[in-house]
Length: 69
Image (tube, rainbow, N blue to C red; front, side, top):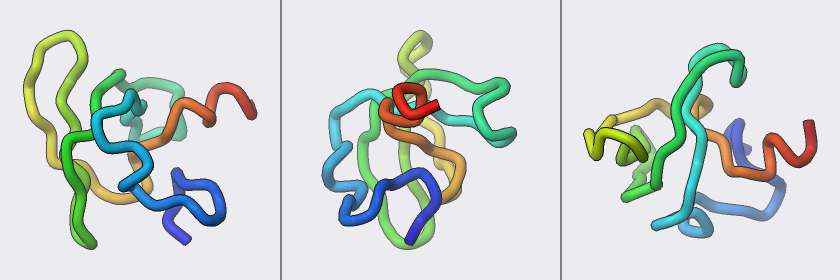
């Protein structure tokens, strides 16, 4: 299982949906829209700047992260 996903989910479930990117378990980070993913990276468009970021698995979280926290 990739950290940031619930059991049974894939990143396909989040394409064009809001995600949160953080390298410190959501203490800091940014909101973005998931653009694409593969086994090596996840591409997220920064919600405020429109800049594309190539992110590592384990640094991108679905919105449920905050609902469960």
